Image 1 (cartoon, helix red, strand yellow):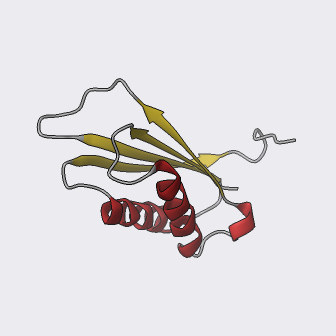
Image 2 (cartoon, rainbow, N blue to C red; image 1 turned 180 degrees about the vertical axis):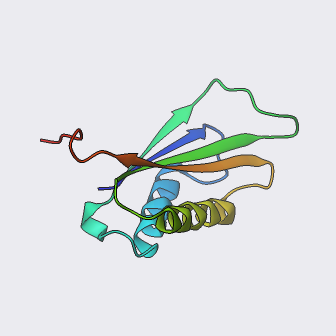
Length: 109
């Protein structure tokens, strides 16, 4: 845990695998998770519509086990957003959403 899902437009200014690696490392460098527990993946979108003067988008949804403080969640969100800003154009829409997974409901095999 956590699961980091990077949704993005196909026309990124960075290769998707590089973006996955950078986001994965940024998640680790937040200091909240062990490196071997982080799972990061990306989904590219061909069809989308954005606001005026926007070229592309990246949205990160970080699914983490419940129990972290709001301050820790905000720290992770800010850390990931700063990572995106490093590799993207000013005209890209960037966003991060941190969501709790309930340990009593979450299952894995």
